[in-house]
Image 1 (cartoon, one colour):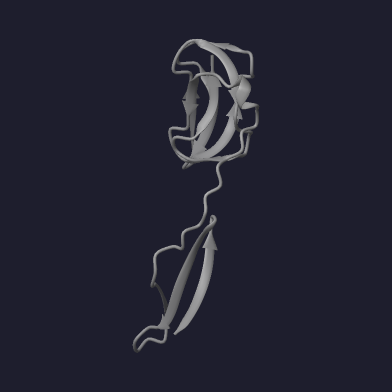
Image 2: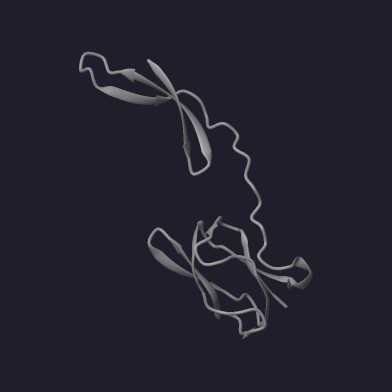
Amino acid sequence: MKNYTITVNGNVYDVTVEEGAGSGAAAAAPKAAPKAAPKAAPAAKSSSAGAGSIKIEAGAAGKVFKIEKNVGDSVKKGDAVLIIEAMKMEIPQVAPADGKVASIDVAVGDACEAGQVLATLN
């Protein structure tokens, strides 16, 4: 039996590997829950002083694929502000109300979590 520590996407796992009975094949058997890995809060790309009161949050965990609007652009309810890619699907993140883009808090290629604020509107 051998013990290994493996890090996957910032999560640390302690894994014990033991030989399978009779076949000689190795089988991985996680023995403990992941260690508590500290999650760093994403750094905002723009000043919070200019941030708007209407938040556009990620609907799913994924990666920022494209930014459709810029700070200062006017948007109508339902307009795509940016697009995230999750599970090989492009998911538009839309304005929940009419307004003006106050901040874009992510960049193309950034990873995002479900519920993370991606942009704000005034």
